Length: 309
Image 1: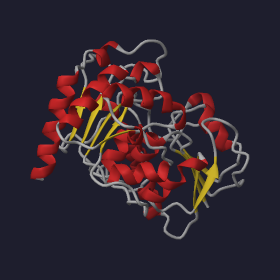
Image 2 (image 1 turned 180 degrees about the horizontal axis):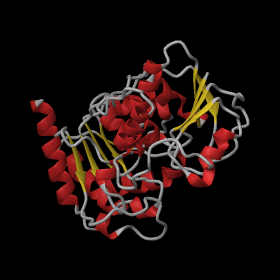
Image 3 (image 1 turned 45 degrees about the horizontal axis):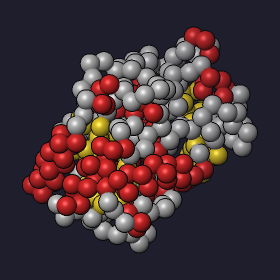
């Protein structure tokens, strides 16, 4: 049995798809278990190749994980905490980035400024696992959702990464006037924000659907356009090749942006250096530098590129 730790969020799991598929191909006869939040099961299915989900949350002890896995693979981070969570299970081998504090001297070195997809493919290749950085496509779920919607997703994990709601509302209002059918999406904790954006945009009550992850996957897969901040739904748009515009603030798109060779995905960033993405406090200045006109122009560009591909 191979146990893989990636107990993070939607975007984190989506960008790990190439590494996860590489591990599946490298161990075709082994049970592949993924330690991740249970609510991510629809996305795990969309990636494919995982036999079992072990419920896990970030760096908490892996209480439900089987002990003595043949190989424990740390796709979570650089350590030492994540290394220790896996070492507690007494695996036959630990595949992880080198970390002296965890007593793990094997493995590649961690590079802070590396793109997250490249990072985990480089990691996999170090251990002899073939990994294709462009293997990001996701399987569409079997779910009945409206087709061809334009999705605006105003939320993000930290306040520093949330573009002002009045600017999202301006974009939504103008897109609707241009003939787009607009939905405002967000997590359960972001419903008040979504309602505010919808009301300021003059949209009706049906513009804020209550969706689980399966429905969100379906909506993105069938969407005309996705506009969001640097958060999980942007990576779903990449996985479904849905035209998208992603607004970056503290973190550079060189670390988390869409593939640069796909003209139907556009990252907007006015920063000069990459910082932590979980910064508390006000909206990051790089994000505030983005105006509604720029987002609308980018949206028109990616739709044109998608029509031409």
